[in-house]
Length: 276
Image 1 (cartoon, rainbow, N blue to C red):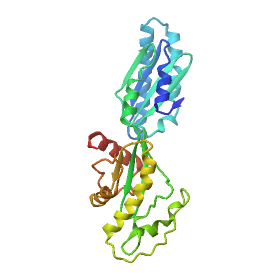
Image 2: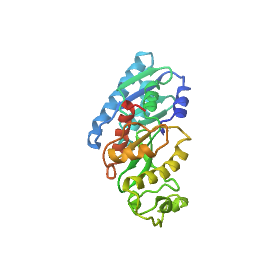
Image 3: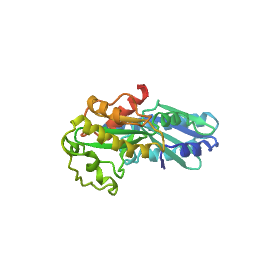
Image 4: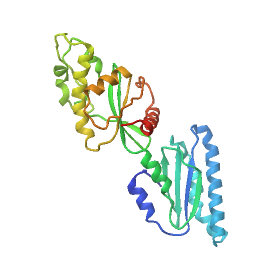
């Protein structure tokens, strides 16, 4: 059974203290075509675990039946279509198998003994703690939650997406009258400014309003916020933002057409090294 990689599921695994128990960590290839080798490698790790169980005093029949759930997983074609960077597999009697998909590649290992070895899974989970990405360009504004190597766009009520609706000549306070629009529905903008503000001034006003909406949501968790966008736009956002966990460096570039998994990986690398 596949489990979500979270603290509760790891703690439940740690309560297992039977012997023998098997813990296998396996890095996965980036392409599906190379996953055949991963499956063969996984079967070899299962055979290694069986030999360790026999060496500890069990007979061959017991060891063969003990690792059988692992071989069933090895032949589960759906399970190996994952885009994850690795797997952590845990086997205990009678016929109990649990596994995590891992967002980062683990060091390959196999452990047999009393209870499960969850240390590496916990370290990877901590590295992939929750964070947020605010992707901004001249045409779009979107907030994402990142967790376990994946990004999910958030539909916040009142968060306007289209920065191009705030060109010089439009008043952001009036333009954002739609901030009470239902979640997930496109807002209808209807402001009429006097055209006196520069584009930078318009964007600062726009970002200040967006910042208030985002802060109301983010302060519940106090998680880091990564800005993905060009340097000039990030500079304006920093002037407007009041969120204390905004990461001081940004992901440079336009991310409108970049796959979420790539943005997530870049954000994680930035979080490892960037001061906050």
